[in-house]
Picture 1 (tube, one colour):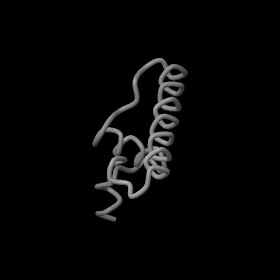
Picture 2 (cartoon, one colour):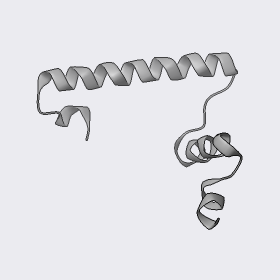
Picture 3 (cartoon, one colour):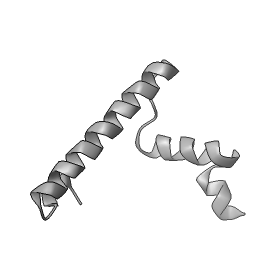
Picture 4 (cartoon, helix red, strand yellow):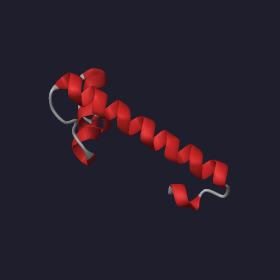
Length: 62
């Protein structure tokens, strides 16, 4: 669901605030890291591997 599909104005404002906070946190991490975070499928793989060193595909096969 997109922010604009929220049923109330309060819900829309909450969604916008969450989106803004998440983006600020991402910028902070990118600044600390010195490079951009992976996006999309690359990010999914990066996060999957960070938990136990296996990719999502490796986890499904075992």
